[in-house]
Image (cartoon, one colour):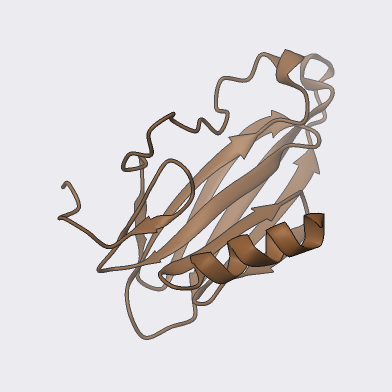
Length: 140
């Protein structure tokens, strides 16, 4: 049952783009954008349990892609505020980023943080519920 739900979500996302979730040291490939997440431990005593994350996006298609991503800590008690927030009413996700060829981000998160993203065609824009919406114009 759970597998069929995941498969249905992935297939519906392929209409406009792709969704992905990755843990540290993994790669996820959507229809056009490949996301690689790598994490290294931080050596200081005060940052024990936290890792330096490098999140890289590589566009493998000829067309420009629009990506929205967020970090979802394994434990909500971690005090990290950069969590994935899904609005009750899906809205345009912010911030979203254009990926022509490659784009990389670096940040510090607790161990076990998941990185979620959605990959949309340039004619669409990502929404807060990790879908791609083809209607209207994307805000600048």
